[in-house]
Length: 506
Image (cartoon, rainbow, N blue to C red; front, side):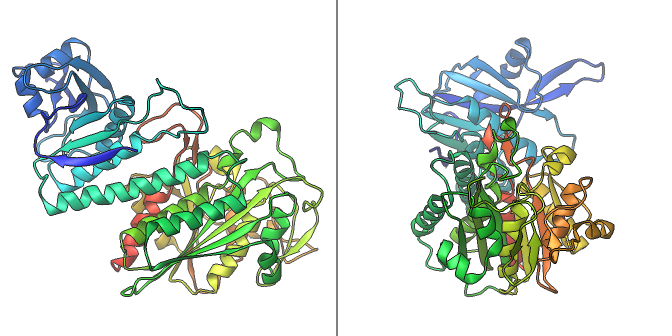
């Protein structure tokens, strides 16, 4: 695991020094690069010609671009890595912290195998220092997997020293500590998502959650696990209905954090389908390749709750993880079956591959009994979301102002979300003669239909939002920015920021 510390100097002994460069262009259209703040000491060791050297070998300064040159002079490292920060800010403009974080992540990822690196990127205030630190810790992430150990395997960069003139300032230290806590939570979610379903199923997910709560050492953080017997007795027909097709029975995990000065109560619900075959409505084989990630919502809400608790955010949080495997075993729920949900509402199952909304509905109904000020659910819910928004998460809900606030908060936290409606005309498409409601409606607008289904299980008068993270939760392609290949930990940063805002009265 990568550790991070602060220093006022950028010339300490290390394996590499990272500096930032801007893309520039003269009035005559001549393009080049300029060094960003933080690189002064390294440039001095180059006799003031580092930018020229980078320019000569083709550095362009575009976001995340990496250029390597050998070190010179007083720099106590053999290698200098210049990372592009995009167009140089104009007079009076600030460098975008989102760009700074993503470029720091790209640089950290490129330093796999190095024992120590110094990051001399712009870190002139707490916001910039926090962005660099978060980027480093997110970019250095690499899932270790279950491979046999190899002597020549390259692990993440071991130690990072963040060079900043504010190394001794309390605000800078606090920003870096906050970045560490949040990035650790994101990386925990990534680890859970990347774990093979042979090793992470409802019981082991619940056990891992119990272990993480214990390790957190926060007395105000408690956990309760309902097994299949308790779920049956409690009337959780949705979770049991989906889970009974698997030899590995479902679980409902309830994590509670209570702060003595809290004035608001946040409830979180996460979809935790640890593997999704589609059940009787079986998926095509190639559609199952990423289905170990169908528990990304549960991973996100759990990790965010841990982060908020560790920071002692003054807000009460109650979090529910709906955990099940969706398998086509002999006991699996069938198309046209009717299940009785927690609270008594009945649902006709018209597609067993629309299982996420069913297990979520039980938890939403239960969470509503806690009478929270705000109820949020997070789920890899629909393929329609991926088709519509790709890397962006979708936000729906019963309050337009809340929906807008979540989108804005996501942007501030470094994530991308997009507001989506819940059109009333689609509601009638989930009416059915056999039950109170069907788990399927019309195909067109499927993402919105799923949101309307979930809304049916939210208690009256409770502000609620639904985050569909099906697209951004798992990256099958090469890493980019602060996003690795595999599980991404999408929504964790947004949830932590929302909890902090709620705790501060926003």
